[in-house]
Image (cartoon, rainbow, N blue to C red):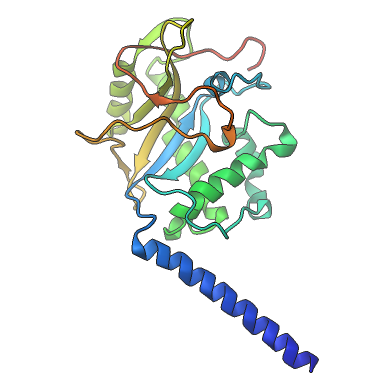
Length: 254
């Protein structure tokens, strides 16, 4: 009797797992979560702290990863939950290059959980990204391959009290990478003179080849949703042409 009951439990578990897989694949096949490009999203930690008016603890003085996103797709499989054990071998690099500067070390995996469940479950339809290990590992690889920090320094673009022109930053990046990036800023508030540099996106095809992030005639995108940064009083927007402030890290915190 016990053996028969055990077999029924195993069979039911298999059926449930198979149904869940079929449902997820069905969603992708129906195009409910169709997307065309991958977005490697870098953000400037000092601006992240300014955005939520948060007294961050030692924000890095280099660009870090916000996420690896699909365009036009979010939360594609609600049953595929984040498991920190699957990326334990990546944690040293995750803390360095994909940190959550807004939370204590004990809670920083909530940022990665959000990125996986909102974005990773969508891009997982690609074989190269079809597990949490692959998703975060590939995000780290793309980040290191793009070397945005080094590229900006090579271009002479560094945090400064002086202002840059958005067009100069975009054109310089395009000349190095051969594709058009998307640059996002915090719009100026009443007591601020100019917008603040916050995020730089570089885009890839599904074959992981660099491509333009924007094409002529595309509509202006709405403000960026930050997910775990809930409570933010401000939001990023595609930068306006004109001057931009690239804020240095707070003194004594870099």
